[in-house]
Image 1 (cartoon, rainbow over the protein chains, first blue to last red):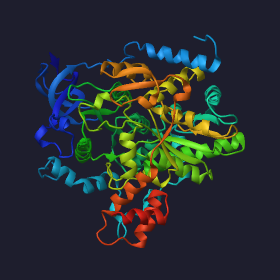
Image 2: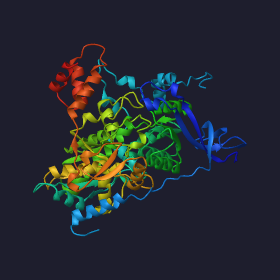
Image 3: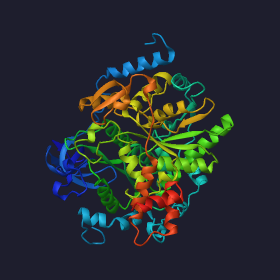
Image 4: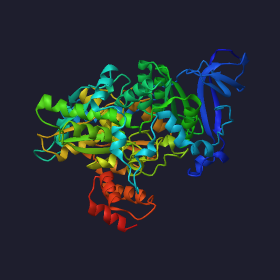
Amino acid sequence: MAKKNDWVRIHRNVLEPEQRTGKLPEDTKQVPLEMWVKGRLQNDTAEIGDEVTIVTSVGRTEHGKLIEVNPCYELNYGAFVPEILEMENRLRSALFGGDQA
Amino acid sequence: MINGMIVDKSYQAVTGRKGEIINKAMGVDYSKYERDGIVFDYEALMNDTGYTLEDHIRIQREHNVGNTPVFELKNLTALARKYAAPGKGARIFVKDEASNPAGSFKERRAAASVYHAKKMGYKGVIAATSGNYGAAVASQAAMQGLKCIIVQECYDSKASGQPEIIEKARKCEALGAEVLQLSVGPELFYEVLMMLEETGYFNASLYSAFGIGGVETLGWELGHQFMDRYGRHPDVVVCANAGGGNLTGTARGLIKAGCPAQVVAASVDLKGLSMASDKQFNRKSFTTAHTGFGVPYATDPDHSDVPRSAARPLRYMDRYVTVKQGEVFYITEALATLEGMEKGPAGNTSLAAAFSLAQEMDQDQIIVAQETEYTGAGKHIQPQLAFARQNGIELLFGNPEDEIPGTNIVFPADPGLLKARDADLDHMRASLIRRQASHAAGPITDADVAYLVEETKSNEAFVRKVLETL
């Protein structure tokens, strides 16, 4: 459960598929234009999935469905890519010759 | 609510108010640059900002932007010479724009916009960008004490986001900005208009005259750095090209520094991938500096978030080359392993092209890749290639000529296979001429023709020949 002033992330559809512009590829026309933004929860309490109001870091009021409380960054350097080591080996031997790996 | 009236926020209503919203959000009345016929007075727009090159230099110095070092890449030069004809293989240099506070040349574009916004009394700035420009605006806003909203195109309809863009969101938030993330679609500009209307903030457009004027310092520095250190100008300057601002500003700065270098545009070849397609969004491995932006913005500069773009690359481009995704990843790895510089991949688009173009040039000539960008989790060859593989893209060694965007990424099996390929610049020039001529209300005049010559860095015979095909 989230409480008032918790840092949260919300989601909302800005345009439903039928409201989108005409100049889109077919696949994009089938889906809504979605939005995600973070801010401080204004409701006294809320559960994930509830419609809530937030105030963003610049002080703007936004509304949408609560999807995350204390949202964190999960980006990283990804899975190992062996081709990168192979590029390194090839480049070093191309420049310096011999077994530079 | 504005002035007690209910505001219609439908797509049609908001985009219909575009001129009025932009006027209020920038203090620029673009209609005053329109002349008779199809002519638009570009230099008047550029000169009307009130900021000269000297002002941009001062504002940037005051906010820790610019004056970045130039490095000679001796090992990459040596490697290029192994694949060049005898006597060929120009010296390759890079301008380390990653050493700007937010990690890219884009801060040159942001500094004056934020400075001007503050001077004019705006409380905050808004920019529509998924790239380094967001971090640049956020950084300058933090430094100059304004609020900042960055609007990003970030996710597909499965909420899967490009790692590079997610990193940019993190960085913008780290610098105090609100980041509004959207799914795929050109209606991003609609959202920006709504934000501008709601907040009354300044539109720190990538395509404003403040932004492009700011990049002039990059070209100006290049001109002077080479004269000071080597007593001569560079022969070729390669600029990554997407929206066209990097090339436009750099070329204008080179001219102001009296540097006659050839200006070459380089874009990553993403032919066949639709930029507005939900399903193809995550099948590309570059989110900027690619042909999906580079070609449409060159041939039709005026389809951005301002009525008239200050980024008009065809006015300054001597040549346009493309490189493949696999080639840019490869040169990024080469820069790390042979030169000891770990940088972000997109910023190395011009370096990939320079590595190939150097091989056409004499050994005593100089070619410059005019930028690098920062790197980090998400925005690095490792996560970007891991993400590509996760999205079903095949990674292989071979001839990059065989790369199919969205299907595979082909790393050169040996360095000699990395090739900058010429794009058809005359075709792009003709496309711009046809598009602008089609807006003419009456017959095309001599003044229109002269304007089109300037717009395309071509000549009267070329323009008239294209007009005959209409």
